[in-house]
Amino acid sequence: MPNTNQWTLIAHNISKSFGSAIALDQMSLAIPAGQSVSIMGPSGSGKSTLLHCLAGILRPDSGDVSLGDEPVSLSSDAARSRLRLERMGFVFQDGQLLPELPALENVALPLMLLGRPRAEALGRAADWLARLGLGGLERRRPGQMSGGQAHRVAIARALVHSPAVVLADEPTGALDRATGAEVMRVLTAATRDVGASLVLVTHNPEVAAWCERHIEIVDGRMLAGALS
Ligand code: ADP
Ligand code: MG
Image (cartoon, rainbow, N blue to C red; front, side, top):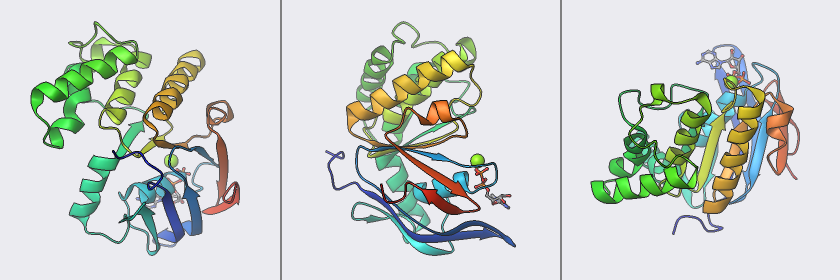
């Protein structure tokens, strides 16, 4: 069972520069299993860089990231990819679903990549689609759905393998206000259901308000919330 208290996500003194631009400046942060956290800050403040370092997509120049007992930043590319596949789910603004695949197979994909039998993967994907109110839309491709529906498919895909952490970067950025609120309601409820923590980057306070804890960063440094 992946979702126990062992899955605290910890960043310790991480820094990351791109040329002369300092994106993250000695940032430390601990997110206990099951907690939802918003990360807010102006454009260019380092939000996406932080999220990518937490996910092991980017490696910080110094400092380290761990998820429970698993090193994130200090392991090999292959080990980081494996950890992402097994323990993390991702929800991004758009372009996250494979356009040529029906909803059912989009959702089943993480389980298939983990080597689960196809029938089991499709069955669990169907359960998740039903759970998120998308029963009957299994055969639709992303282009044949509304923006809100496609986002719910992406949420199902992020959660289908019961990850320890869900990472979301501006997940509602392309949606109108009411649809964005509905997507946040579904995202926070589903994440809570599986016991995963949620790390959500947004510049929108209404979206951030769905989280339990709030962190603000400016110029790659934390303003508030790091210790709460
Ligand atoms: P945010 O998500 O808060 O808008 P980012 O984390 O994307 O901010 O960027 C933080 C800083 O790092 C910015 O100054 C940005 O220009 C720079 N940066 C981010 N990614 C790259 C990259 N791949 N190459 C060069 N500079 C980058
Ligand atoms: Mg960003």
